[in-house]
Amino acid sequence: QAELITKVGNPIEEIVRRTAESNFDLVVIGAVRKDARGPFWLSSKAYKIVKEVDPPVLIVAGKTVALKKVLICSGGKSYIDDAVKLTGKIARGLGAPITLLHVVPELPAIYAHLPKMHESTDWLLKSNTELGINLRHEKETLENLGVAAEVKLRRGPVLEEILREIREGENDLVVTGSALSRGLRTYVLGDVSREIVNRASCAVLVVRSRERGESQRLRGLWGRIAPHRRGAV
Image (cartoon, rainbow, N blue to C red):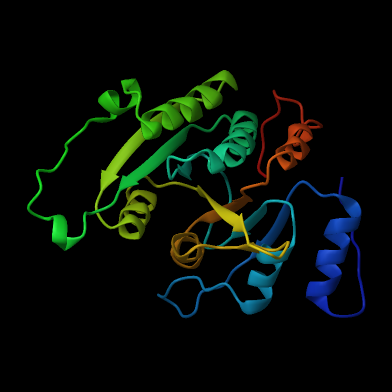
């Protein structure tokens, strides 16, 4: 079902107001290229929507017309839990596999003399480290939803490795997070998330990390969509 609504006034204010009044589960906006070959740059108006509305925001750029492969950028912390759950429900409806990507950043030059750890993905998932526990929990969450999931580690500059995985993995959707700004009930994109939004050549889903208790609001997400249905979002 579709409904067409027109408003008179400031576009951003009307979108934010409509989103708050109607309790939407997802907001979808577009992005355009800066030039024929350049990255996608989120305009100040679009970024204001991302920052101020409460629901997850799906930013569609490039030639994305279907979601067949999904990439979740996991920092290995629990703040990404809501994004994992929501993405899992979307992927289940589409029959799409998910890759959980964690990038091990390079050590500062001052520590270059220290021996480097070369832990494998299997070793990490079996370990009792905080990172291993959280990644294992995320993978189990997706598998419990009936979604095929794998964990992948990369090493190097975080942003460059994420963008390389997006390209090489031919992903149709990349999922990242944003945080609630301190002192204000608005959301901010970190440097990496902002660059993913601006430079990824596929759709990007931005899901907010939430204060304790707020995540209950996500429990009904996509509940009206039958699990067996297939189609495009």
